[in-house]
Length: 200
Image (cartoon, rainbow, N blue to C red; front, top):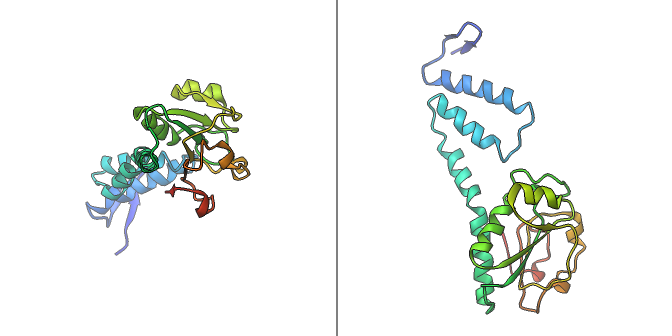
C-alpha cells in the first residue's frame, strides 16, 4: 500500500493512525540531527519526540538507563578490585586519565567521566583528574572538579584510563602506581591485558 504524508496541508493519505505519528516523528528527527547533535544527546531527543507522537521507545529508554548508570558501575568495579587487593578505600588515591567527551578533543560537554569521579568521591577516595586536552577552568566551571593538564608526581592505588588520548598510550602506568598491587582499569580497551586488573 502506498503511504504518502503531506505535512504542509496536514493531510495523511493512505496512512494508518498508528503509522502517521511514527512517520511524522522520523521526519522531524532526521531534520533535527542534520544540524549536528551528538550521540550523547540524540537519544533523549529521540525518546521525547517519540513520546510526543504516542510511541513509547522502551529500547531507547533502556539504553539510556544503562548508559546513565555506567559511571556508578565502573566506580563499583574499581572499588571491588581495590578491596580484593587489600587497599583501604577511604582516602585512597585514584588517578582518572581523561575527562573529555572523547579522545584527542578538548570538548567536556556531556562527558560521563564526571559520574565516575563523583561516585569515587562517595566512597571516600581522593581523585586526581589528569587530562592534557581539557581546560581546567572549564572543568571547574562546568562540574566543580579540579583537573590537571600535567601529572603532579603522585602515586596511586588505582588508575582508571577513561579517555583514549594518544598521550596516555605512551604513559608507563607502573611509574604512577603506589606499588605492584595498584588497580589499573581500562575503560577504552587500549592497554595490554597483562597490564590491567580490569576492563569494561
